[in-house]
Amino acid sequence: MRTTTAARLRRTGALGALTAAALLATTACQPEDEAQGAASPSSTASAGAEASPSADASDAPSATASATAKDPACKGWKGIDLMLLPGVRTEGDRAYLKVQEGTWSCPRIDMPVWHTIGPKHEIPLSATAKITVNHPLYDTEVNKPMDVRTFLDKADAAATASRMYFAYTIDKTGTVTKLDQRRMA
Image: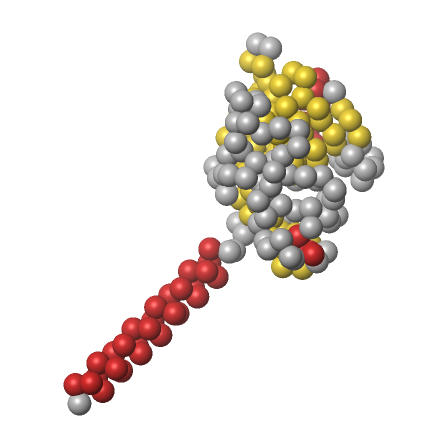
């Protein structure tokens, strides 16, 4: 009788642990409502492989998949990207972007979903950064180059009008040297 009770307790404990693990996995994978975005895949590569991109990121960044590498829905939607928020600030000859990092998951082939992974914060933008943007800064879905001054002048209004996500590269000082806007659906 002792063995039967012990076996029943083990089964109940295992079932409880399995239920807790399933609930944890389900809630951990839910996107935050205010930061959820939908997009169509683009050919831009993401920068950085950690929550904060490594200081030695180059123009040919390596990326970590937010979904499995075999998942065709996530092709091109890997690594950590920046979401531009209203709040561009200049201080002397330095410009700072208000951003939030996030990753992508691909529950549907036509709609990668944005998941924030850190707090909202400022990040410095190089005066010589290479910036390519599309809608709403240009009336096109194809990325076009834009100089830093023009980007800074229009960034707040654009970030207020719509969500803008960027693959990015930083230098050893943590300054953004490259921004490539994701093409959004």
